[in-house]
Amino acid sequence: MKEKMTEHSIRLFEKKGFSETSISDIVESVGVTKGTFYYYFTSKEQLLMDIHLAYIDELLSEQERIMLEPGKSCKDKLFDMVLMLLKSIKTKKSSATVFFREMKNLSDDKLAQILPKRDEFRNKIEQVLISGIESGELRSNLDASIISFAILGVANWSYHWFDPEGEKTEQEVAAIFMGMILQGIEA
Image 1 (tube, rainbow, N blue to C red):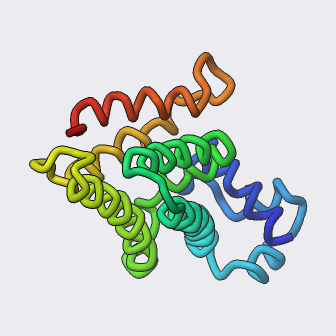
Image 2: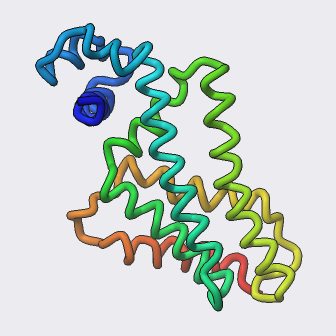
C-alpha cells in the first residue's frame, strides 16, 4: 500500500504540484483513508522526502557502478552518466520532475539530508573530469567544478522537454550532449 500511495502521489505532484496536492487528493486517488496515509507517512513532506531519497539513491547507486567499471575512459564514463540521467527521465519521468521541481518544498532539515547526496553525485562527475585532466584525455586548463555543474545543467534540464517516444532516443540525445561538451573540453 505504501508503494501504491507513493506512485499515486508522484503522479499527482507532477500534475498538480506538491503544494496544490492535498493528502485528501492522495488518499482519494488510492481509495484509502487518511489513517492509512498516516500509518505509512508522518506528513506529506515526509512522503516528498521519501520520493527524493528513492530517486537520488538509485542514481547514486548506478553512478557508482559506472565509476567502478574497469577499462572505461573518462569520456565513456561521462557519456554513461549523462545517458543514465536521460534514461531516468525515460523510465521515471514523474519522479525526475518531482525531484527537480519540488525540492523547494522540503524543509531545511530535510534538505540537509538531500543536498549532500546531490553534491555527492556532482562530485563524482567532477572526479571523472579531474581524472581525465590528469590523464591528458581532457584539456589541462579546465575548471572541473564548473564543468560538472554544466553537465548536470544540460542533462537535468532535459526533463522539461525530452520525449523518450520522440524523434531522438536517449542514446542519441546523450551523444549530442557529449559531442557538444567534449568538443569544448577535449585535449
